Image (cartoon, rainbow, N blue to C red; front, side):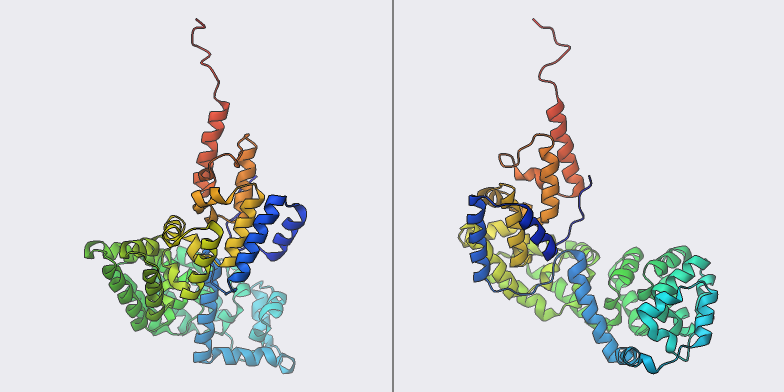
Length: 427
């Protein structure tokens, strides 16, 4: 039995099945009604999740769409997809792809518009990839996943190759990255912006392996004019100093923040300032705001004051606490701040179904950083050892997967320890 992968939000149908399978007790019904009432009092708002993947994917998608609209590629691609019936496939393109063992049916199913283009560089693209060390299988996989690569001119691909090689260890690593993230490599627009941003990040002190990760996980930050990225970085530096940070530690803090969350560069200085002002109005001290900013890896800037207000209002009503107590809870568990009301409600219900009380959760609020699936898995695993979480410490559920495994082994060893020393004299 392996621990489920952590996700910020569970699918609605999974929640429905779990409700059907578990008959709530009277106490649970009472808690559920309480949570439902609180949820209804807090209007639903759409927020980006902290789970690196969902929030960041939405930001990248919107930014990519803006870029395509600006350079015309969005309109161009739209014309392909809306007028497919009147187009005829480029036979030479299809034949060249077939010779490379590319799955033509897959391209027709996913990006058929590529096959209708008069100008395509199948042989040239394959030749360049082969020069870099890609084998036949790798080339076929790349072109199947990103068929629009054949629409890039040899000059565009070579320029992109030079840029990526400037931060990669060798061509072997480059080919591996292209095979894993072909869309990022073959997005050749805004080449000058990409070059300027790479130079800026290097001058800032970011290592090449971090910049390489940015290319694959957050490519949109390179498409912006370098001045915009510089402006956000300056805002972050100024914010750190204004909150009491020291000049000596500022560079380390900034580089760590950017390494953990490059998507912070897609925000605006206005959003940064508004969120900081919200926290200060809630009587968080400068050092506490800086603590939250560091613990949340800058994701706090992806939220909005309205979202944070509703989440805090929900938590305040659930735990029946005053403003000072709520602030202390948020400092213990920033999840109360960045998770939306529906997510908090779902996780609370999951804990209550396991027989855990609200007072227990209030005592150890960090448990709300875990998804319901992970909590259920860990409770079940501890129960197999005879450990009753209802009467135990919720701290035993917390931490990373490695942390929990260490806790589990410690409890297991304690349970298996003999009650007496077998080598000690009986008298």
